[in-house]
Length: 328
Image (cartoon, rainbow, N blue to C red; front, top):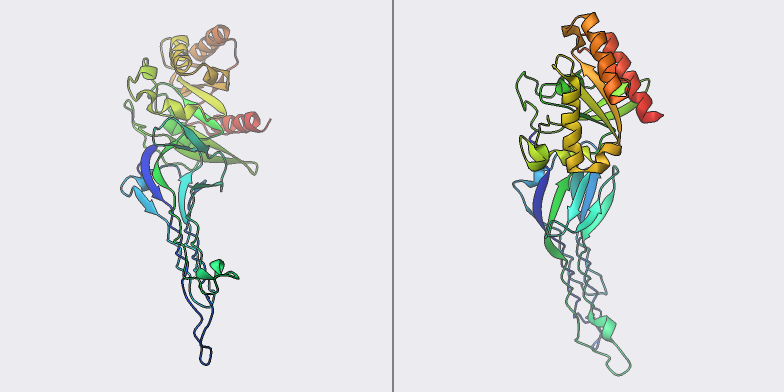
């Protein structure tokens, strides 16, 4: 499925139905009184969050959405049927903005949340409503009011327990495929991952959601590489898994490069819990690995995890550690 994280759509709630100017007409009753019913309420446009969605691609080709109009009132004081609400499904993590794309209206953070975005018009009044002691046969009735209509922006910021970050080719997509059921595109060239990929890891009857964030490079906060397009998805992750290719000449430089880009984009991101994982440890000798780990841990003052995507024990151990971080 193609990925789309921002879209502009036009929504129109249904108009209310008009009231009825009907008069009672029955055999042997020459002067029946007014019996016009009210019009039905127009349908509203409702946004609803769904966990199994991770893109706004459904709104790329259809951008105009209209709820049903309320039915007109009928004789015998029958109220018109209300217009059916229009429910538009969006991924968890979707933010709703006004047409200026700056004013935040609503933020979907949980599954099955509903937000009435455009309210349907009220039904008009039938002539029965205007009957009085001085006007026994009113012909007056009112039309239904208009439903709300306007343009809105939908922006998706991925919500995951853990966001996997790192330089291109650090092995993020491979890691996601090993510990979840996700099937991201994997190849040995820069920017294989062009969109965030989501996967769910299950371990001991517990589950966590992981997001593979496309590789970051120096200058990403200014739009270099894939730029800020995906930096925003990191903001919504609870924990960051910083994956580093252990075959890099200087692990600390690789580490600081990513940290600096995050800092320049948003200092709040650096406050998140970070798990540092050295990947591809099967590609170097044990003595060299030990030396690199000791030197690197001394510089960042943090214990690191090690990983090889061909070592099932290391994968299982990391999976267990991740659950410990999420559920501690």
